[in-house]
Image (cartoon, rainbow, N blue to C red; front, side, top):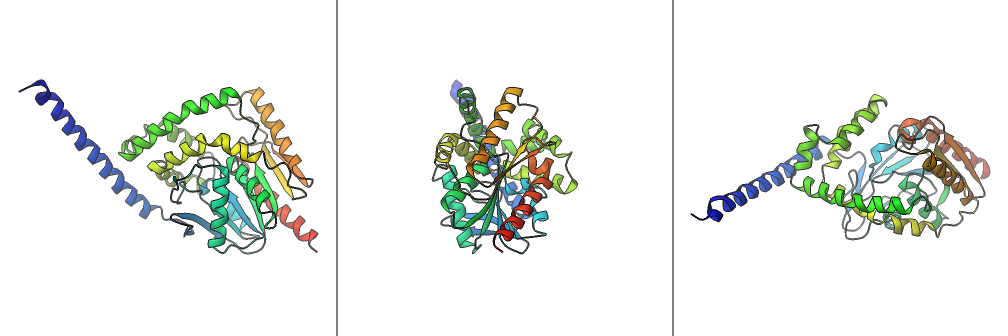
Length: 335
């Protein structure tokens, strides 16, 4: 027998069997996850794919919330359930995140997210007026929405929101280098490797999240397994990659929002420097957060003194209070 027959062909056969087994393992595990972690709320078809939205509470205006980059709606923690005690609140997952189905036929820009959210609210028959709340990249999306649908929006809360001028040339280069990692994770998740590594507690990023989340209330900690199940899906990493790859375009879209007029605006920013952030970057971030208040002639700046970037988990009461105060202000203005 030749060398090819003795070594290469059997090796290819073993590889093919391994790939088939991995794909089968991934498919079965995803089916189990869907039964184990069913969506809270409903899935709404907005034209070839479904977005997840979960509304709770009663009252008006309706609060609509958008999470940060790569984050599902459950990362709002206890904030929505507390807001639901005094008005209606809706949290949703952008396409490809959480329980929402992916839409990778288009680039994942802020404008695309705005277009899909607008369709979702109409299809789900969630009527305005709205108070929009956006964390991190979700803040960019909500700024665009408030600008484009001014007649529907009566208030805006930006929670440590991104700013179109935050990126340096070095940051752009680092982000481009990271894109290959997302593609590797996408492939690894497709054949079950990422899931296997994660379940064996060998995936550093998940271990870091698990350790970080242990300091929060038990009701928040219990959502870690749900979050982990999202990270095992190939379309999750494909969506993260597209969102990051198009972040420059999203920031260019933000530049068109020079003013929101007199729209009631609350800018809520971190006051405790994240461990990976240098003093110089923290000062720049703080300056850009203050700059966001100039978007409206009716703005307020609140600093979360005991919080890093994850304000919804570190100091959720500040977001709840900001929304409550906005509603009181809006209702007093309309008397």
